[in-house]
Image (cartoon, rainbow, N blue to C red; front, side, top):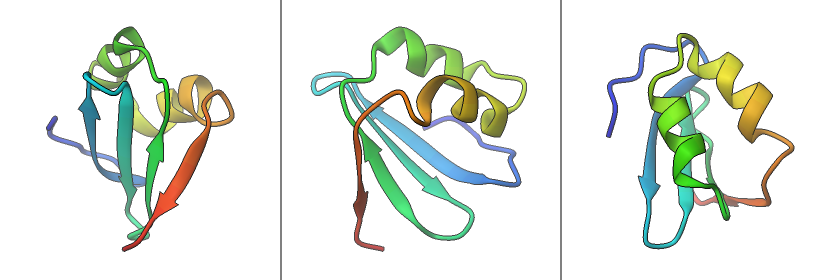
Length: 69
């Protein structure tokens, strides 16, 4: 799991066998994003701003569901 320094995102994890991206926000809410390509995850890991990358390349681009906290 990458070290996250963000005001919006606490942590994230990728499961390549399922193409699922798990994101926990600083609010405590957790989501899984479905069918996320590995290249998008790699871009997320290397982003200068996790929140900006998330908003541009993940949010509103992939189906998701909220997970219990």
